[in-house]
Length: 255
Image (cartoon, rainbow, N blue to C red; front, side, top):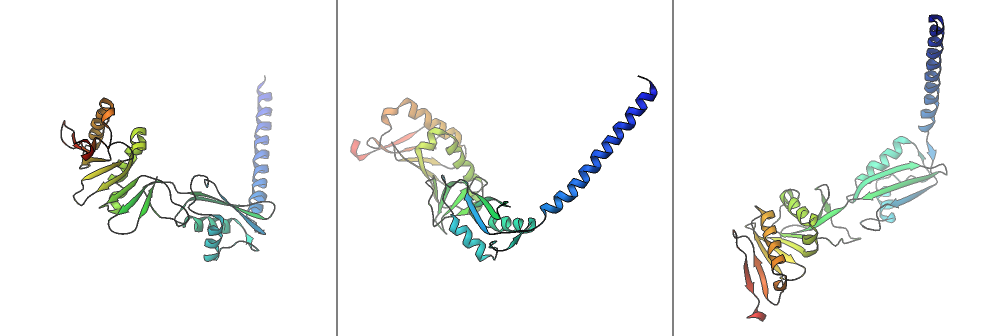
């Protein structure tokens, strides 16, 4: 290939690139201008994406929430700014984790809502009950739905519920054995912990939160070694906060 041929091919390639770039710029101008146009909204379709698992909110409540904030889109012109405003408004709902809003070609505004996912419920000695979700955020109790979750009760401060108690509750739920066994974690004013079991020995005295993983492993080893003794007819509680020792309290039925 001669130098002249190479030069001609280079000119052709550069011209082609410039043509493609210019075409894209023209397309972008018209496309984005069109996408920013407002569309008349005739109706709204609302979808609660995870409603089979949680029912903290419903379609009627979402419509009433938008109406309360003067953002009912029906019979209004809706563009990108209006859609974003509706999304931000829905994010203000305490049960909403994510919201998507977009217009369809049939003049229908589609709203998609994902609910927050609580992992345990807090029953404090002082104040109202609430949930803690996966993001360590406080989530109010819903009048529509009660989630069946492990309970953290007693002398619980809100900041601690999102911190060290969250870590402990998550530790229990990440372990299949403890997840199916422990129903409630109760904390007294001295931060002494008592676990309530769904089966077998009803109460487990954990003591302070420190070194809880080793204490729970010691308890697991006891269950594995003496499964026949894990019964409320034999013991009423088992204490595991002593070093290298477990102490079982006999049931009156077994005396």
